[in-house]
Image (tube, rainbow, N blue to C red; front, side):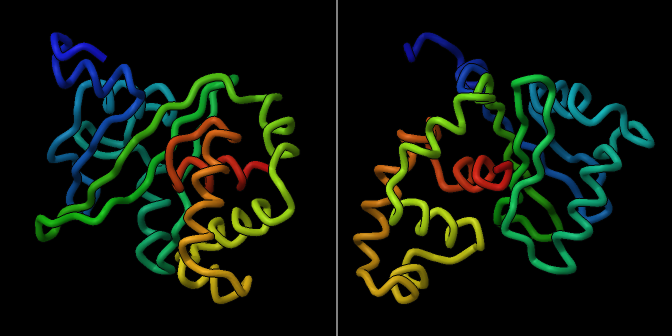
Length: 171
């Protein structure tokens, strides 16, 4: 992507945005595209300046049981993934939003393209296991798990572990 495109626009074109909120779900910072996506996929919040109700419930559950899964919202063949990120600012919650368009029916074809071992690795990734933990479970080296993931991502049409987990959880 050319450098002449402003940074905020580049992030939107990549389908990513950031939201920072308080533990009481009051939005402290949100990129304009993030606000638009939250409204489109989850509706209006209970009060202005708050995260939508469904996101608040998910975050509250996330705190109680330490979920590693993303929250997924769908509209047609477009999905919005919300992933809680580590926040380095005390008393804040950081959310990464990722918009993925048009995966629908192709997902089954891509999933069948995975080898048996790649499906096993993806299964354990979806259960929140680290590469080292997966390696111990499957009796292989952590670097081999990393190599499997490198091959899985392009087959699924995703760029990272979070998107792969989210796609796998739909199956």
